[in-house]
Image (tube, rainbow, N blue to C red; front, side, top):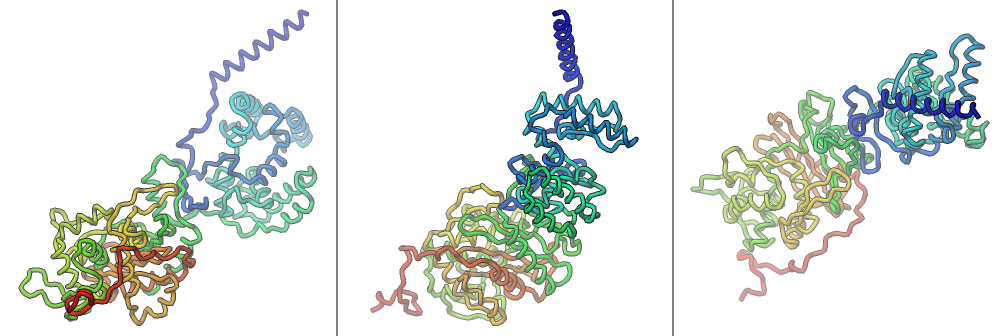
Length: 593
């Protein structure tokens, strides 16, 4: 019995020693908030842009449930079949590795379990006997403190995949442009073996080596019965050539904005549809050929039902310094030209000042301090409200604003959610309706979305799951009337082919700021609202470019690529009635003697 007591004492001393070592040399477990790159995803989980961590490492957080089962099967089947059962080390594997190393006279195998590999990732060491002993103790320490799923998750997040790419999520997105949940068997086998020699097997640099190593993994999985011979044969047919290491840059300015807005969130899921974003970008790239140097453009595509932004292009080319690609023109405040006119007419309808066919006067404002002209020159004399809005006549709009009150107009717009900026120290005046105020494309598009939603304006949604509170700008009746007027706007001749997309039934308006500095076009169908700005971010003029000439064609091209509407058109509210109007009084025919 004495030997039993000796063993018990030795065991107790060993346990105390391990406990003291654990206290003296704690595990360097990674931080939760600062150990990952930041990632912005589209609404379906596809990466839009990534931001490396402070050390320049691309590592995206991922959980075991976020990874394809094929990858887990390939990883464990090739690296550590007994992972779920061993205590952190596999004595048989260590003995086999020792024999192989002694027999060959050099290190050819380490006998490391997956837990030991995690230990080395967390506590790097030299390949020596002391280093191996340290690795074994750290592996036991990991198994003591963490469960198997936590250890496997550490590997998924920290395994080296070449260069500054770490973790299966970053590798999957960088090499394959897909989520790790979408990996095929062939891709899973490739990424399972890549950490063994990330520099030598990088598929973007050495595709033949990578394919040979991948096939070695596939063969072992077939021999072990983990995957069937048929599945492995099919996986072997997938080529490796063509993979290229890259980081996503699908919506760079939106991603920058979201990470600045939510600095503590590591992974942000946006409302963007990556496929739609790519089509919008391609459309803009082709359209850029007609734009002069140093010009830029911005595009927003919004789902009217949810006010969620599906495509966000803040500049013509993010990497083009000559076009000021780093400047986000979706968010920048610019002169809106005539794009606020629909809301003046809508508010005047609600105030009872006009109806859709009221008589307005388009004539010189003789003897008044503010005497604007029309964009195309000349005057039309008596015109209806509908015609004045459709032709974007300036004088009728200024006269109407004078009756409604510029202070009242600006206050109502702000109360309805429109972010307007007046010059420092300035008060609202009649020039507001012709562009004498700063407005962003984002603000304008949110207001036009409101025309399709019964006059309720909601801030645009950029992050999935957000539900901002709407504000009432117009009554449902006024919104319906204004939208109906804009829907019936006669198209310029050069846009006739573009307007073949009227299957979308587009209510649209253009605008041009003073000096041809900003060109706008905003249109809304039953399902979508599309906003376009074209100009130079530094504010220099673009003579010969205005809303109808430059921005509208791009807007209609974007509508052409959108899916057909699957939302029913807004129904006419009960507050709106159809009457026969007598001229020139503009009163109902039934009231005439």
